[in-house]
Amino acid sequence: MPIEFTVRKEIAAPPDRVFAVMKDLDAMGKWMPSFVSIEKLTPGRFGIGTKWRETRRMFGRTASELFEVTGYEPGKLLELYVDGTQGSSRRGHYRYRHLLEPSGEKTTVTLAAEIGGMGALMELLGRFMVGTFKKAIASDLDAMARYIEGSKQG
Image (cartoon, rainbow, N blue to C red; front, side):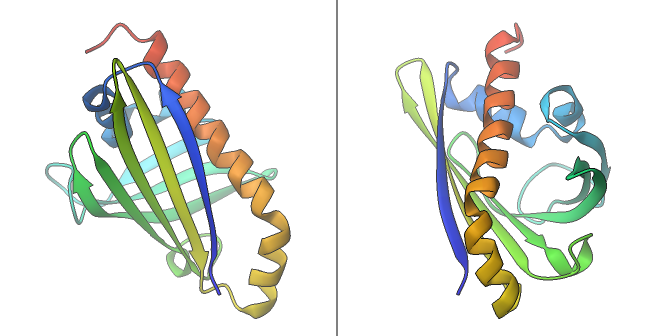
């Protein structure tokens, strides 16, 4: 049974600006906590099928995961799939669905996450760690919001 949770963040910027930052792989190091590197794996424009390997420092060690864009509607929706078997975790999968909703000059980002395929014991343990997962994602959204709100771009 997959682990599912949702995190929301209001950002003082229009959806197009928020989306532009979310898809800017080259800028991730400017705002993402514990960022180490990004390796782009597909050439061309960002969209469905775009893949990259993201490396971050987590829990005192470096971890890399393979991301793929599976849903893409500029200014509205970004869905990502992480194949854990191709990364440091060596198991499972992660799905992240970012929904952007305008509210005046602000945007509410709702991130719905699903973690599955970890095996029964790991999924049981994961249920005890769901608060830690949510906190890490909320920290990423907070950092992205500070970057967007403090930026004079766009």
